[in-house]
Image (cartoon, rainbow, N blue to C red):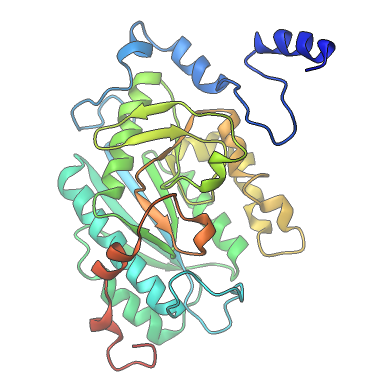
Length: 326
C-alpha cells in the first residue's frame, strides 16, 4: 500500500471506515448499529440481542402486524421476458406464493402473541385469476381485505401501499406476489423485530432473505443470534421489507419516489434511491436461513437454499384444476 494511502487508512479507521482497493473486501464497521448499541440502556450491547418471551409489549405497536401483499394477474402485465426460476405460469407462481403466505400468517397469528391482518392490494387482475386467488386466501385465519389499486401500474401500487402504511401504528410487512414463505417465516421476522427493537431502543428494517451479492461487494456484517436462526446486517434489499409503520411516516422521502418504478424516471424509484437509504439511518437485517425467498431468478436466491421442497408443499393443483394453466 502506498505510504500516503496507509496514513489515510489509519485516520479514517478511527471513524469506522477503511481505504481499500476497488472491488476489494471491505472491513468497515456498521456505524448505525454501533450508534444504536452505544445509546441503548446499560447492558444492552452485551445481552441485548438475546431472545426474550413473545408479546411485543416493549415495542410500541409491536403486538399488531399489518401485512400488505401486492398482486397483479392480468395478461397485459408488464413482465420481464427473461424466464422465471420456477418455469411455471405467472398465475401458478402467484397462487403458490399466496398459499405459503397464508400458512405463514396463520402460524404467526397462532403463536406470535399479537394480531395479524392481511391487505391484498390488487392491480386489476383478470376476473378468473382473481377468483382463484381469493380461493387460495380462504383458509386464512386472519382478517383479509382485497383492495383494487387506485391507479394501475407497479409504481402507483408501491406508492399506495406505503401511503396506506404511514397512517398505521403497528408493524408492517410489505411483500410482492412472487415470494415463497417458510411456514414460520413471518413469525420469525415478527419475533426478531420486537426482540431487537426492544434492545436497541429504536426501529429497524428486515428483509426476508439475504442475497449472494452480500458476499462479493459488501463489508462484513454483524451476525446476530435470533430465536431459531442467525441474522446478519445488510445494506441492500428489495422493496419487500418488514418494519414499523412509523418508519414509513417519519422517513417518507425514502418511500415516495417508488411511484417512478416502471416509468422513464425508474432510477428515481430504485431500491438504491428509495428504501435502501433507510439502512444509513437505522440497522437492517436479513435471516441467514430465509423467512421467504424471491422466486424470480436463480442469481437472487439466498446461498445454499433448496426452494423446491417448499414449492412442492404449496401445490395449487386443487385450485388450478380444469384451467389452462393446470
